[in-house]
Length: 120
Image (tube, rainbow, N blue to C red; front, side):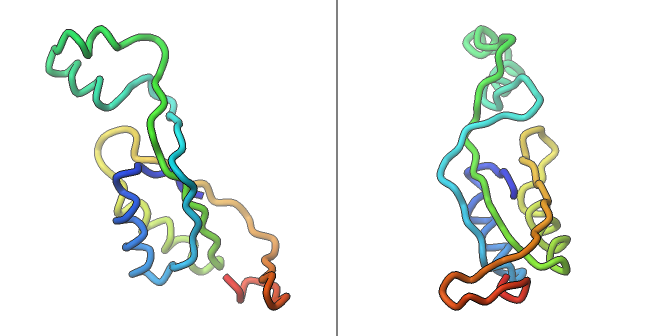
């Protein structure tokens, strides 16, 4: 599972497809935040000493729009998938997203009844 910025969605899908990772599910717009107590637009304004932005800085973090990608791949494609997502989404600023790697015990194709990693 990967959580990425909304504005990077099409670029991420294109890069994954070019890498041969074509099966994925993207949930609609979700809202979340990382550990940091910041909002990118507010922080940009605060750096420029804009009074409106400085007034918004407070103790409570704001939730930001994000996308969640669920991608199931065989073991040999895990690192390629991670590297591709990072390559597209990594910037020097906080908030680039997170990738969670979970074990996949089995898979079942409903239409044919096939099982195992060959259907990934």
